[in-house]
Image (cartoon, rainbow, N blue to C red; front, side):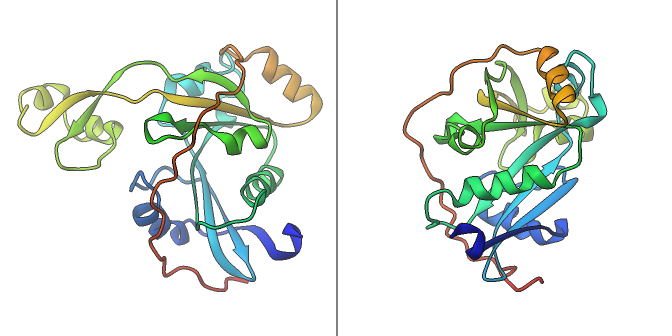
Length: 221
């Protein structure tokens, strides 16, 4: 039984950093407000983090200005490979039950790396189509997020240094939303959802290389 083999609990965000920097394909530390670990026989075998969305427009508009302070992004899910069927959905579903109410979660599946969001489909998230087409800044030779670059440098400075900065198309991602709250709150959230609801996308998933062996696979209980 999955529940007898695996446990899910809140962990310190510091324990996630090695997983996110070296094991997750994005190789960046996002905003982290809530962090959880998946344990197999008391050994950490996966992490999940939730934080503030980098998009203020989404935060304020996803529910037409309602529940603004309760909108967060499930921004990282990183686990070891080789799990049996349903372990990942058990991990995500367990986290959803542990979060405070009310809460509105947004998460993305990056189709540019072959992800369709099947874990969100398995845990009954709402699919709202692809994120908007837009461009973003990149510092050549680095992995810095466009938001951080815009905070660190002026737009004029980046335009004036094309040997260092470039404007690139931001990959469109599958956008999923999950409502946490009582029946009345969830009904109000769904009624005010800005985005259209679409059928779940299908396609062949591609797994990224997650073979990096973390040093935080230790007993934490």
